[in-house]
Length: 212
Image (cartoon, rainbow, N blue to C red; front, side):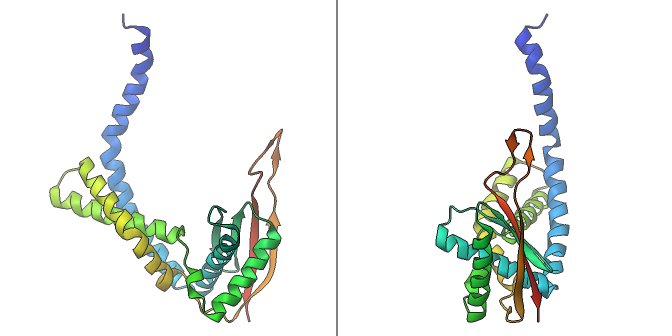
């Protein structure tokens, strides 16, 4: 009869072995998926000027807030055709003020505000480079190994930030925002669930824009 600790470890070992067996297929499928979907998503944004304008204004807003309150003031954003979201531990009035300052500064020529280090475009760029290099190595050597993953990760981390900024500048944002105006800010506070407060320090704001 097997000792008790072996009986308890057996399901864990089976789970680990099963996932190791599937690992090559997961990496390959994800790489193929990213190589197909990421370019289409970038093209979709690049062809939509309103989305690019709001994406630039979203970055400018967050950059302005972080200029005043520091880089540790973590915020997230999402651009839409009629505006953009900003979520984080900040007063909605500060977001609106920062959005108006950011818009005026973009119009004045502070184009660097349209680029942000932690933009989803940069993450997508790194994922695309990882997938591309991983698939090239897989096709070149004909088998899966950890070295392929490590090499792909190293190149993605080296090239990704520069490629991401390039895509932000030329494909997913535009500083041509002279015809954009901010028409209002809608915001929502976290909801209570029982005795717990979800996202207690965060607020989600939607900065609505339009062109004239």
